[in-house]
Length: 388
Image 1 (cartoon, helix red, strand yellow):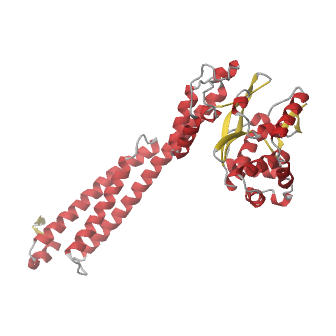
Image 2: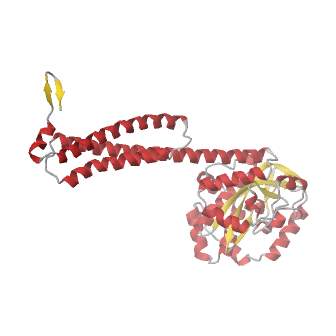
Image 3: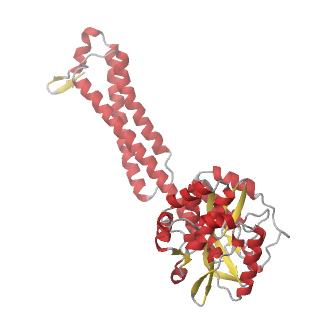
């Protein structure tokens, strides 16, 4: 949240933005939302969908309602945590009617999603009065029509004066011009700068945010590709971009560490899922193997065709092979999964040996003349020694 020193600057900017964005008719309807219907995102989104048709009006209605109804939580401004559970943030914000930057951002995201808008939380940091803030910040990137826009409902709601929040709506923070916003807001991930060139963290510190001597960057194509990637690839690409843009301060470092932690979590989750699937296939295989052994103990009664008997053993092989395939995909498991992996591999070897033994018996059974097949179910001994 920014702290203003000169109120006249704020008012001048706000009036200028208002002149360029006349949403007065939308404001009137958006602010008529009944208090009883404003404590759940489903209800707020339903109201917006009922009264507005265009993506632009919906986005403004969300911005308008949030900035008019959510106060900045000054008491907790230094407890900014960009990585809390988003559902908890949204619920708490609607219940208390106050929050910090992530509260505004995640509430906007949650309502936007239910009105059919595509929105993302952008995490970064800011500069106020030409000085880099020590707190991280968050705002939104929203696809309206075919264009991406940046929206900062936190800064749009007002400012802090003498330790208190003063509500003063700044329309200029809706669909903010990226070339202007980069002077005060820089995302950790340069993808979300929404610029055709990349401003590094050092550039931001030095106030060199213009296009001169910058690498060109097709952010539209990159954003389109980003949305098609699996989450793990999104995270790894983001980590690469963040690091390449310069780890200039502790906020960037913490964000980069968070990305790596998310990647590790996703990796471990995937490995655990593969292991659990391997266990499921193994258990299915053991159940089928025991079923066949019971059938063999009953001397192949009731009678089945050769194809059906062979299929009983083959079904065991399919399950055990599927289990092994899942295990083969596991890479760099954590210590607990590695220990369980070793045990399951050992059990698979034993089960596979047992299956091969039964398969050999079936082969022998059907190679034996029908008159002598019955004898294969019995074991004969001579002086206690098995005779085959």
